Image 1: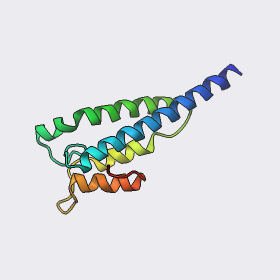
Image 2: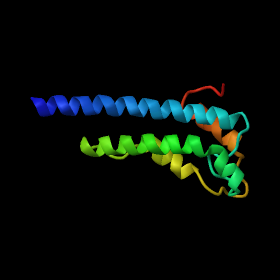
Image 3: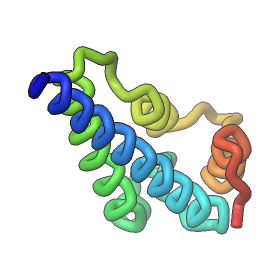
Image 4: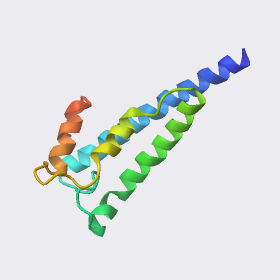
Length: 114
């Protein structure tokens, strides 16, 4: 019974962290939608990377904690973070800018831009 209780507590904590990640991602997307570049890493200049470092670092730390808990629970990796990572980096020449990309993500997540 103790193992079942422990697993239940781990799963509750995982769900809490996933909600915290989602809230942090939405907050970062809103900042980006308002015109602050760097979250998606479209530009490789130092200033732009530093501009979003705290937001990205927070998301990375939360995702690492979530993945560790998911591994303990025998679950697959955290999809939302994997999708976010896949959306980062040098875009195609005809890709929309980061603010528009952030607005599309907000819409997809069912959150408004502000």
